[in-house]
Image (tube, rainbow, N blue to C red; front, side, top):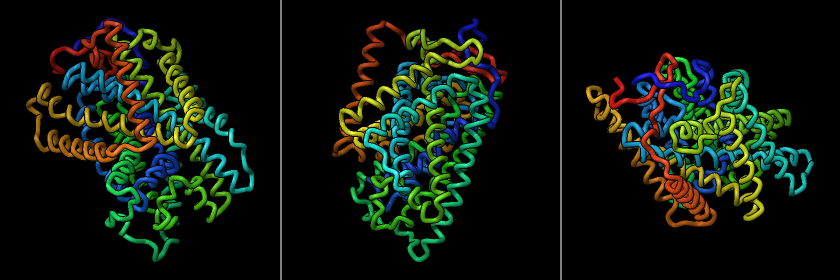
Length: 479
């Protein structure tokens, strides 16, 4: 690689291990995921929720291993799509950039919408019932409050706010889960891991439940999007991802089991449609605990949206700098050195989707549609990453190539994700069919607009950063 001219770039050497861990934990959002996507998975997986969460955790471990195999060698603001671009080619990288952007955008939408579910649920525990239209201001808060944090100094936001809040979530989840498991007594059982008949929608339901679980646990990988802003990224990004996965993932796995046995195996499929079941379970212990839990859960969802906006805005910024998107999105704030135009755009689109779609198809249907759409895009992206790994080492570091390290993990995670993706969408049902249609239409429209603009993919994945924080442009080899 060689140094380039002075293109727009993000703040150099601004983020250390604590900030990398914070970004990884932000999108993992342990408590927010337990009350939103993980609980929604119970609609499909029923009492087998712990089983699908366990498989999601295992595949996430494989995936983080896969990502760290990349991040030890190459880092950028483009994150995942840069890996694919420098493995299979720029066109494949561009397609992954689209899927990753949509995954983060849709995640921002449905997690912001969940604020409109959990807050009324808490208040109803005290006999306070909000009007049916309360989802509007609550969703605006859930989506909108994250925007300023992606505009201001991202290092301060991550270390002083995100990291502290996310760590508190883990502590609360471990404590509450252990209490619920002990209190369940003889209701504790391994059947939730072994008896597949407990899934109300069969194998297809298990697959969809897996997708909803993996999108949460695998969020630790988003530390890669801070590659351009991180100190010694080849080490710091890697450590931040592993720390977040082990803490966040294990707390979510334990919580999935605690939720099922405490709620009741026979009623587990109602977890997803119930009003914040974890809040109801906490209220049995203490009203004060329930209040604290909801405050932390709302904060978790806001923190997660900070992380997803950071990721999506950096994809858009990186694409714009590489001539793959309008140049407007490559603008960097003069003081904070953040991609403020891209960040505001992501926030505005998320807010528009979160407020408009419930008016067309109902709040809960819209929420489920975005959850499935985000999972679908997420898995497509994971398939792209996993296929790319062996090609990356064969192409750039042939002397380090290993079938055990680079082919086997790639094959395993690709196979699991393909099976999970296929079984979850066949046969299609409402609103999952709408989710697939939404993703297909948006991707085709994006590609059509790109072709019509006569843009080229030559530079996609070209801008990288070395361990000294210097922005470089790739040559034919990384050595």
